[in-house]
Image 1 (cartoon, rainbow, N blue to C red):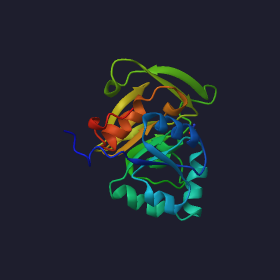
Image 2 (image 1 turned 135 degrees about the vertical axis):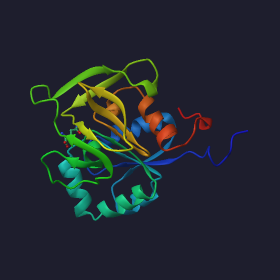
Image 3 (image 1 turned 180 degrees about the vertical axis):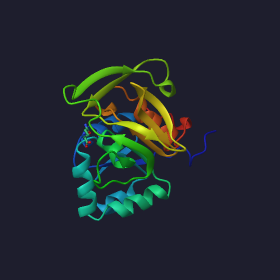
Length: 206
Ligand code: GLN
């Protein structure tokens, strides 16, 4: 008999200041979780887990500062809120951003390089091997993507490209350099909800 508390469906926010937030909302809705777009401090306080989308990390970081959301969000995350950052969201989670002092949450022990795959290949797709998602390759969509050039203690590299981390986990923080929300493949969103945020398999998400 499943425990009713562990089976309560989570309320996931998608940070909606700039970038590809709608696509994340649609992906999460398809999994059957409650999702809302969070663009205010009050909305952030209602989130039990948060997705930070791709977009422009400098813009999202500046808006988080301008709207006085940066420090309260850090506090929520330090308090155990699960976060999934994709592309610009990964940059915002990183402790260090090579050559940049731009605003960031800075809570994940990784050093990232922005636009790391070079200008002439701004955008590409490749099949990724991600063992935690099973054997079937995952469609990786890379758009001016970062990668991790360094990882600190407690960070697991779940997938690498050219020897650099493009999917990383540190406890309740998950960072992807690519855009799972632009594919029809829901496995990474499901992994975030069930394994990282911790709403377990008994909930039969998706
Ligand atoms: N290059 C962008 C940045 O560093 C990220 C691009 C993206 O999110 N697709 O903010």
